[in-house]
Image (tube, rainbow, N blue to C red):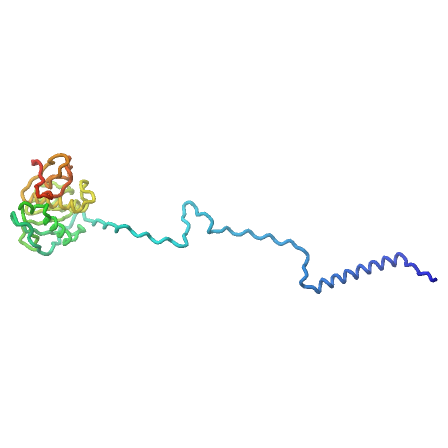
Length: 275
């Protein structure tokens, strides 16, 4: 029986080292030929923080966030009232006469043919102003009731009465020539001239707030009354309608504001005579 020669320790170590190197080479080769194999585990980078969502951020207190669909404008319940015309404090003294001749209104009393002229710079239209005055004089609550007078507007002479609608300065000049002090504020009459201060026509008075046509009626009826020879009247009693011949702009003295000469039944609205 033969005896195997035992390897020395040095040879055993060399053989073990060679085996390890061969195993590593095979493992590296196996990894190199597999491109879809996972690589070594590397922690993924943390995601960057998302920017603030601008659509969810509250608007500052002093701003208004934009609405992607602005609401449609709401329809107005009523049209805005027209702006009052602007007038010159001192007009140029030139006029525009209202054209046209109307029919006679009223059957009693003397016929008063009248014209209307509006000073330039008042901001008023002569034709429109004359039409309103014409309507006031035609109203059955005015001076035509009970046969006090009848009226007809004419566009050319002869005139029995002329209605001047003028600036405050011109009012003072015209009325001052007759010894009347209007102070740039009120109207006056000196037959056959009736002077309407445009300040009162436009700004009205505290007794007639937002009642333009009623106050215009008071102006015309009061000054026409002077042309017809009527003087001032006082208050007939608390709660009673004020006379058209009362100086209502100076206070109602317990009466109720009223622009008409007669009531609906045709009765004259009077009061105690004022010296």
